[in-house]
Length: 45
Image (tube, rainbow, N blue to C red; front, top):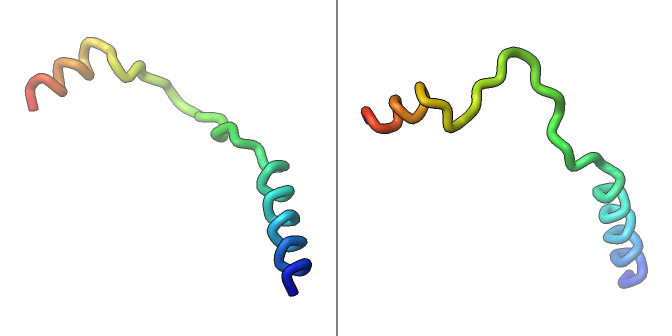
């Protein structure tokens, strides 16, 4: 039983290691987080 559990844990970890950890591509116009307009909005709140 212990061997089965260890085997299943290793399979799960191996599956997680194969997945990409990068976020998916973004579509649309990107706006910098610290642009002047965004900072003005933050300061007005």
